[in-house]
Length: 340
Image 1 (spheres, rainbow, N blue to C red):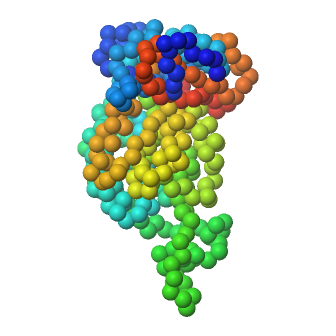
Image 2 (cartoon, rainbow, N blue to C red):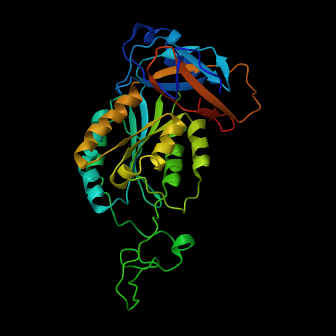
Image 3 (cartoon, rainbow, N blue to C red):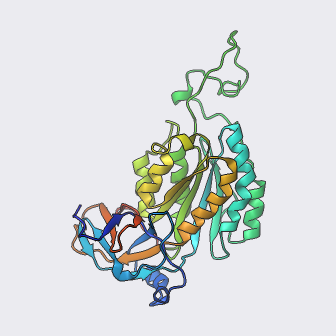
């Protein structure tokens, strides 16, 4: 990557500041919807204390694609409507599952009438909810009625589950296992985080470009080895469709912050990840996720000076003001179809 000039901070993303006079200038959402060649770059900016920075001007940003500086054609710090899939781990340890169950209703408070939300659960498969809704009362009711199970149905036989381990005292094919010996067999997790994120991306990819698209992943970060889709393949879909992943780590994820799959997805897509040390933290973390996703800067440019035959293009965002931390997606793919 090119060296940053003195006084410029480098990073991945930045937040938007609602209510600015410049935010309303030139109707940026309309420009984004009508200009399919634009590369959209949501950016979150925090200060050294972790607070969102809402007052950066367009001239304080620089954007580079494949090391070539780009002209910022659209700048906005207004709040875009959100399209979100709330993706909830359905195979948490009992204590964590109880804490998440008790907190789910608080998620509805972070969304407005302009947003649309789709509630799903996952274990080794995705369990879709009732579809996208912009009705907050309906969303609240669905969340209140969502019950997580820490004993999901056994995955189909084969692969790592064909060696005869027990699941809750049952064989994968059903019925008790009689070994004549009382012992505990620790199973590898059957959870498929990569597959669940992939399926959530399919639900989001065709939502309008004038919306901020995100996957709100609540998980302990445990990922089985029986995924159909690999991490890199899922990231390609996410980046091709302008989808960011925001994670809330519960249970075991708290003790594996640097290694969790939540962190990898967040870093790759310009999202973020939070960790709940105890159940009481969850409601506050849900609010922080939606606040950060809503309060981003939006930069957009038409690529110039790069090799358009390449499938992947890197993105780097810099800000002139010192001491700031930037979150944004690391790049994008041109091979997949993009929404209009």
